[in-house]
Image 1: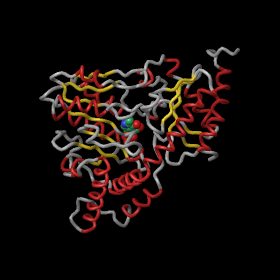
Image 2: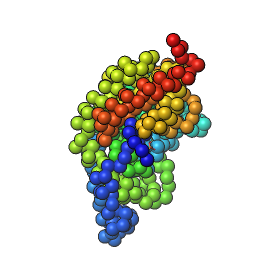
Image 3: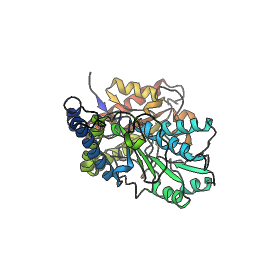
Image 4: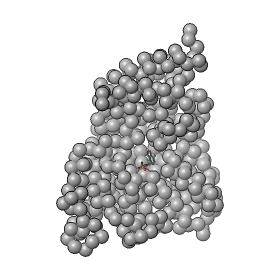
Length: 388
Ligand code: PLP
């Protein structure tokens, strides 16, 4: 492989070598099943409980409020279907937003087919959800509100604490998908007033295939996986000991480094926000100028297709994204960009650049040198571009 400048950390992050080292003993030496009563099993169980305690304290939660899962998608499914099935006698109405990840919107669409009523609240042109708009949709049938902490495409950070306050006043369960924020900006379940919170190891330098759901004590959820009595009967299946240990190690590293990493990444992000529109005409920043993830810059570049930019960047050794990774094979424009009011043709020309632990100033130099040349070449071929 030639040059590789990785600028797609929101899709996934490399597993930190300190994380894989911490996981290593649990594949062969400490391989026991954590449900077994002999020493080898109990050793695994004790490592899992240490991991649970580290994860819980990072989020301001109690140990018994953390359920380990296989990732963000499962956590979102467990939160939303779990509450919907547990409270269906009380009501059948769920409020969410128009810009959620498919793990949330797809789960809601599934519930809609089963007879639940779903309200998708819109956002403003910077991608912000208004707590008042959420409040206005609440009825005596509402059982759950689900709003993501930060958007995976445009990076806008939502007013979660305010929405949580409204939900709590009305006695409604409140879930937030924090897959893009845990490990990147402070996330405290008490300050955010959430009852359920999803996150995923591979987004903060942990391994893939492990995540967790925070469930506030007293919140009723129906389990989705039936079988053994793991996780207090709330999620059956043999414990993924290496994954859980690895995610806890990743959290420990984020606890130490998050502040300075966010500071450095936001300085690189701000350089992109300043320089991309200066070097390339008719470009707009998507998402909120200030309330945004420290590592996210998302631009719409008029007259060309996002896919063509990506392919040309790839040839130059740069990995970026258009829309989210899960939809990058679909030619439909991103639902998030449409929700912030972009017309189809502009939504098609979007580029998401996301930074991380190993991003260097030189990577940004290279992108800023390469991207304008690619755009110039593509625009010269575009029938939409006025080549005067
Ligand atoms: N929610 C958001 C906001 C995401 O960005 C992602 C992953 O892209 C997910 C959920 C799904 O997480 P996972 O890949 O761990 O299933």
